[in-house]
Amino acid sequence: MPSQSTESVMNRFVEFINTGNEDLAREVISPDAVFHAPSHPEPLRGPDGYMEVLGMMRSAFTDVQWTLEETVTEGDTVAARFTMRGTHDGEFFGIPASGNKISVQAMNFYYLADGRIVGERGQPDLLGVMQQIGAVPAP
Image (cartoon, rainbow, N blue to C red; front, side, top):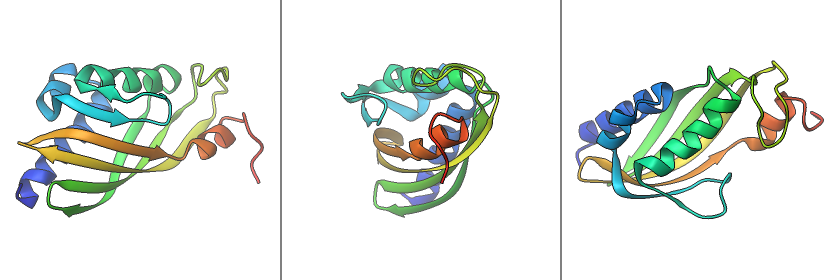
């Protein structure tokens, strides 16, 4: 996949996660995609699986937004660093809303084929989130 095409897929993906638009999800995520998220013990699948993770985040941080800070592409694999920002205004892993603002990094690997995402391994800074919402003491 040419790098411009990869860049286009990633830009559409960021638009999707920042809007939660299901049509965009189906445009950029393969029906057979497999996602490994630290919030779920088993992999999630396809656009619906990604919508599940996104729904969990949006219910805890209704104003959540991701900024794609940098990418490194090799073939059909993209390493991406994001900043996630939002306000903790809903329950998150059993922690009631604190009203605290968060800003944390995430490092994800995306696997692409035929202009769509077919896989992701994500590693958000969950410790940073928990510290910023007051669930874990900050150093």
